[in-house]
Length: 511
Image (tube, rainbow, N blue to C red; front, side):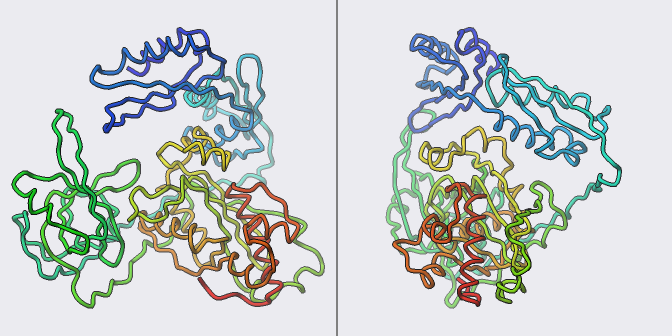
């Protein structure tokens, strides 16, 4: 149906290269929101005609809204997309191609690209055609290109054998439920899973904890009937989680008596929604966390043996090295390894108990080895949700950029490998960035070791400034950068950290 819809939309002259950006069903408003992207100017008359077409494709019992966004990609955006696409189209080719091998030019028909490959052969024959096809799905306009053969000495070619990491499943921890009694269920439950480990899909899983927030609302079902629904936020001392619950007529009066501070047992079904596990309670009973409960230490999957999605790259800055550099660096800096990192996210909610926790959209990290910045780890992350206008304006990261990026399930195992055995460093990381790293690593079964230094309190203890924002501290040391991009913020934080440790001559306390 989407192809038929798009074909009709493209009969409008100004929308002849349009693509569908998103189709969103908002159940609460019984509304379907359609967003399309074009690279050409359009009139009010064109928009009205497009809305009429959209209306025909949406069932009558839903209202319909259409949004047209004019977006003209540049050569840099196209080159980034080509680089990210090559691995999914041809893994063999991806091992030989770097960003410098991709050239893109804009012309009157759209964009023309060339990918330089070593000894182009049968395995690259259809790559350009497939790349053009994928680009047409992401951007407006025409795309054409080719793979160009280049010569290279065999000694320069490093062929990496394909490796696969061993898959491990860590069983969730559980505790014995105290004082279980029925409220509406019919099954006695003796054990509950730690809420901190509730990151898997299940038809029936039991959790137990104290209600710390309770919200009631009326929802309209697909049949047009109104039904009472509750959202319980429950804490078992390991973590908090928000659980949806639809009332039953026979037990509704009992449920209405529940209040904040009560301890309950919930038999839940967990489902994946936009990349996040969401529990819905089928039954609610009484029970509590046992007295003196001390959570078992969380087990972690082993460090992945191989990088699979995001590969670190060497970082070279000749300004770091000179004949006198090593003598200026404290031993505590040269004898340890640090990963300085920064994140861009969809928002500021870093707690899953607060509801819809925000997502990572970019990771920037640099590894300091022997007192010098030696490696980088930079990637966009697909949040599997729409970016707000505020975040787009703040970071300059467009929706189309993250839509083609790998999910956190693909990225976090590689990031965990990159940071393993290192001290972590960030600016205001203890209060924000690290919470995202810890949560999304745990969702993949990994437990990062909290060895964290924060340059914000470190700068506050060593410098006298009007404020201690990252750009203010950077200005103090004469460092310029592009703020609110993870890779740039991480790099400048790494440089600041080195300068601060040179002043302090020792490592600060861990956060």
